[in-house]
Image (tube, rainbow, N blue to C red):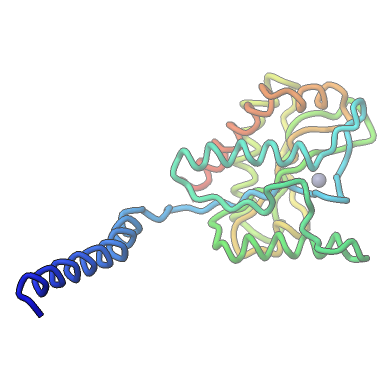
Length: 232
Ligand SMILES: [Zn+2]
């Protein structure tokens, strides 16, 4: 082999090694610089697919659709605060797999599995309420009756929503209520349910369908989550 050819081959080999090292090393370096979030919050948009939840008394709007809209808005706030987010669903489908009998339980089990696998610090399940009387209105929070941290989170969230939403929108002042609900009971983190309003109330339904009110709810639920994360 001639000297110049050997030199050329050495340059080509060196260049190849450099490119390969960069290809491996640069992504590793970039990954190492991304801080993993201190907190991870699971957002669970209740219902979906054949289970639309409750429906609006005037318009027939599905609870499942409103739950997803509000969960996505809360997600945006959390991400902007560098808080990790796990969404149990991102589209209109349920999580039950097939519609065979027992789909409701399968749906809840799947949600609990996603929250557990994601190692969330806290979980908030978003729902809409319904009541026989059209005059019942406002945000209501439920916590796990067997968990003191869920009670603490639930009371903080209810206080936040009473002050910043219920007080000026509907005049209600609710206590957070305990319950034996699968989604707050069968997950390893502190979990609550936020019922954002009553679809049995024409006044709440009208508000819940406006982007302005959805934004107001999402921002204040986000504030309630921050209050819990920073004081728990
Ligand atoms: Zn619901």
